[in-house]
Image 1 (spheres, rainbow, N blue to C red):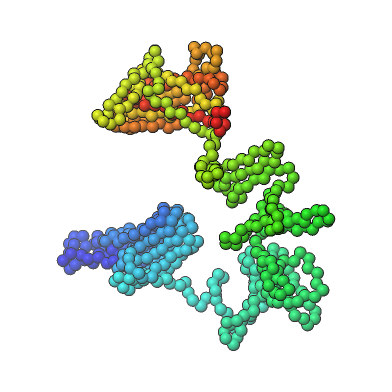
Image 2 (image 1 turned 30 degrees about the horizontal axis):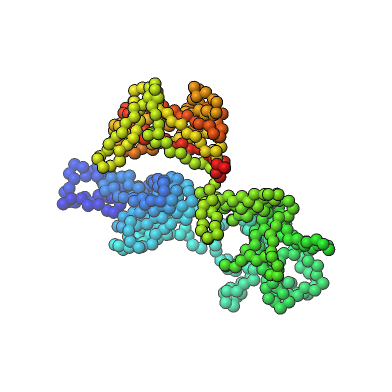
Length: 529
């Protein structure tokens, strides 16, 4: 008959078994019992939210769950669960030494029995008893450290105790208090005196007369009282007791309204004042209510104070477009969408369309619009994929030597005559996945300028082969290219494409089949008028 094992790993040897090894196994059993009775083990549970299963090690020492004290360690970034098998019966000293504000739960591997959880801020100790009291839903019970002792941090009830000159010392930011409980119903009702959470001594002097104190939550009538900087609670009521103005308190408020009346010919003012340098005034209707201006008997005008622009936006300008009405003769009205928003206008037929905004635009230059240079020109080709499917007009750039193509663009007048960028579209001739390096440079020539002039500084873009012949590939956008010459309206810009095949970055071993170039440029006018 073979040995069996307890839930904590102690080997129960059968009669006549393990001849010659009985002593070793007995010593191992004694070591396991020793670690169960007083052993310590650390268990790292570092990481995100997860379940760490503690398991038995039958017939050998070292199993974490077979130690009296288990310390959980590691930096945790999510709530943790630590489990033990359903049949384990033992009590444990648990210590939570993890870092990170997340919970650590100790429970059986399955079932709906009770468990113990260290809160996200509890980095202390706890005694628990794994009861194994049910085969399916066993409980983890917590054990107290002793009842009946008065501790410094515990909550206990003292009966028939005399406190001589007691000092109530709450936390530095917590007010001390005394509670007078009713005796007739065991203190269901009480009177509480609360002291201020003050950083210095405070003395409260009661009047030397029989009087009634005014409570802040009671309804009282004050006569012949001057209120200096009064703090009003939640509302001001009219003479009928109905709400006139409701007030909401804000902790540590530094900004407020200031009301000022005015002499003849001047406007009374409602101003935002306070500690901040720039303070909005927020007017908030309820529900779907509207903010209404005007007398109802004439047109309403919203204007700026003094010779300043009027700017309309939403959400205090956060993620908002703006409409700016400029204060000037013949002033502009500027509409500025936020992010990828589109400025739109409505015509007389109630049709809505986008307003064209000057900015970044593109020009597509296909290979068929290019020409090979006389010296070291790339090879123009028309590649058939499959009959009846797209043919590809390309220029083949050699992998072993620098080759060139050129093209020319007359940019629109709306171009800001600044730098441009480019992106190339190509297809590989081989399955190689090395980097292909294409460069682009340009020069501008105007009326009467010589065309026999050097190109400007080039920009290079690397794009790795995708590993499949005739796959469409699109490079990243290049850095800025400064066009040589003096770019201006009505000039022709000559561009030169170069495969930089003889330098280190270009490692693609096949022909780079250039399909076309996309030129990015910036406009600063709505049209070419």
